[in-house]
Length: 161
Image 1 (cartoon, helix red, strand yellow):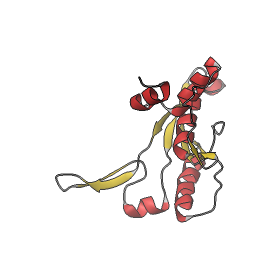
Image 2: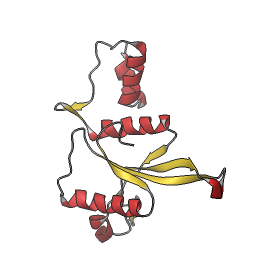
Image 3: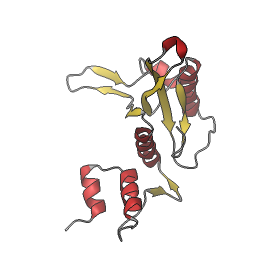
Image 4: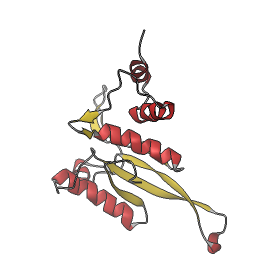
């Protein structure tokens, strides 16, 4: 018979969901091992945890997979935001999580709901900016989005929304 952690892995239940279930139940199974890299949680864990946090705050966040490759018919395709060309992607890398935050505005648009663009570049727990070429390209996207009114930033833990 499988244990709960094995079952959750089979069905793609994110680790943060299991963490919450164990917390709510007030118990930890004997096989429980949090997803750690060294003493810190991985980027994948942070991404899942932030997405769960977003749901609780009324945000919608989606994973923004970015890449390029050749199809079986020989055609070449690029996918993901801000990935029009290799040159663009080198200097402006769109964030891991893209979404919408709903707000209700003041008197001039009473009752109107507006969607605010949200972008989060997820990093492993404990990460700090070092200015690598990749980080500079990620920051360029975040800065562009922020300059246009978006809610954009890096995150390496729950609570960074």
